Length: 287
Length: 261
Image (cartoon, rainbow over all chains, first blue to last red; front, side, top):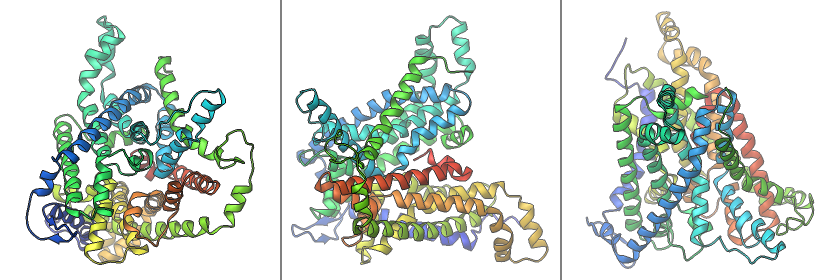
């Protein structure tokens, strides 16, 4: 009865769908990134690496550096806020564990635009924050439509996606490790630095990459919270499609981001196959 | 054992309240007499006005229709895939595994752009159908993973017994497999519907100029500025989304997926 080689026809329907609706569109982006564009906006079918070279033009390179810096800062902040959250969830026992995880994720299943609008209502020029400042006579704080608006939006929207990998790394840790350390006379800080941190650093690094790379491609956050002057890689990418009609250049940026993500995935597979099962399953067990 | 470190639990609750603050303020704002002044007193007039306006019903109806159609499409495809591929013994080839996980893994911006490019090059008219198809293209993979888990719990002897008794593979599927995985199918449908209903980016890229879903409407109002209409729509959207998430969390099959965003 067991047939290893043949894929049943019902599965083919799904696989063909995936090939048509996922693989083919991605291949189009990849292919497009090697084409050229005339000044009139027509696409020319001639292989070139011009679009990738263009990313190193100062105009785009400046945007790239700025984006990397901003996303780096936001990832770092997510780590700093996310670590105690993950630590709490990993150490707490009983129903609080799943309640805490669910509490953390509910806001992220409300619409993405609403989360951004929430930030606008709090920090916009007529937002709650400025109303409170005005009521005590303090000058207005313009956070929105600067890079700080983008930063705030990034941290807010990506936080739980960094909590989860830290949480799973901490869960995997043998509890006896900590006990052994304290029995041997280590202080809490020493235990953290010398026992816990070295054991979770791979998981935390991978988790950070999976937050950092998608951040670079963000379009809506810089568009709605950053104002017109704040250039951002993801925004530049989308504008190539919608405003500047330079599909090849936009595709080249999308390809670079995808390749970076695949690299992170490859790294994760290499490290988890060395250790144990993937993270998703363990999160499943916790609930 | 209770949690000991008060600093860590303080930081946890602090972070959770900061996460909820913007959303709570949106709810609060929907009832303000003057949306730009938090002390202006409460009123229901904006919400009542909204219930009479086309700004709510048109986009809401579009969102629901797109959600229902794309979830049904995604559930059909994902279930077929899961049932079919589960007949293969052993691990799936990595190529197929990667293909299935790709739509979940790739950032929405890139999925959206690639679908846009695909639709434009195929000369499809952007609108209702392209959004339905685009939503199904990423939620089918979520459905697949839920269904694989459901099928794993199923006793394989049941379908083997049916086949021994002379049932054809299609009969086995309709009469034996499907009735047993129906709870999973419903959980997966709800997840796919929620993904579609809450989606902004993919709709933004694939909807063209004519079609407005609820999130798209909120986005376009946001570009104009704060208004009672915008606050009211946000309030309604929050209510529906929260309701959907709570439904998902209450179902065992989909709970795990809520926690991965």
